[in-house]
Amino acid sequence: MRCFFDVRQLAHAPEREFHNGAFVPFAESPARAAAIQAALGTLEPAWDHGEWPLRAVHSEAYLAFLWSAHQDWRAAGREGDAGGYAWPVVRRRPLDLERIDARLGQYSFDASSPIAADTWEGANWSAQTALTALDAVLAGDQAAFALCRPPGHHAGADYLGGYCYLNNAAIAAEAATAAGRRVAILDIDYHHGNGTQDVFYARGDVLFVSIHADPKMDYPYFWGHPDETGEGAGEGATLNLPLPRGTDLAAYLPALEQALGRIAAFAPDLLVISYGADTFAGDPISHFRLETADYRAIARRIASLGKQSLIVMEGGYAVDALGANVAAFLDGF
Figure 1 (cartoon, rainbow, N blue to C red):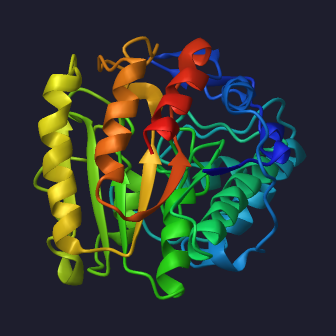
Figure 2 (cartoon, helix red, strand yellow; figure 1 turned 180 degrees about the vertical axis):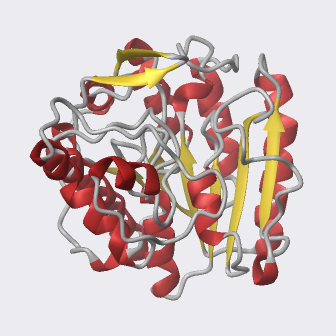
């Protein structure tokens, strides 16, 4: 399997985040990518597809904000990383806001995703890596892996959050759809991919299926519940399968079978997999109990569908075990 990564993703390096009521060191650090690189060996570089694939998913106003946010933060006399503190709970709508503090709230949904000096650089090359891996699949490869960092599945069309700034999986899925492929997305990160769901929620041409921690207890809380099935033309094209804390492989497999059955019924040409290794038993911010060997078994079952697959890296914060967990999943394919 061809694997892709661009070193410019490492430029995104915020110092700290707001987590569980306190400022702590940023968990989504460049060390995550370095650990995966060390386990996989030589990775192919990404090439620049420009901003058009990004604009197919994200609004122009949001992209302009993300590009300039840190510069505007420093121009306002602020130090460190840019971060929001006020959000519109009701009647969220486009507004011509001038102060950077206001725009940070307008284009985000949490305080855990600071914008550093090179966040745009890292996020852009993360998306370009997903698109480059997609090129390999569209050219005929059965599967390809995009080491995307920062991750993307919490980012919506016009908002960031959950360490995510550009939605790599959604950008790749939209590009594949534009290339004439019928696409399904399987999200198996510990946390629900609310941004991906939001992008495709009112569309019936892309299926979104997610297995994740029950949002009654775990982030992102407000999305990922079983009654979220899509709307309008997208009714029935979203399937959420939340699982309780403590889920091990035996409890995980029935949900996986349900997910794969729904995907098989949709009959996609191409499967985009948002893979998060934060389902690992030793992950510091998550609460499933999957072991390294389990990822190989899960991947084999997904691969048994026989679909061309693009695997996009999402979360996973047990850095010492991250490389082995990713390698085991890819080996299963």
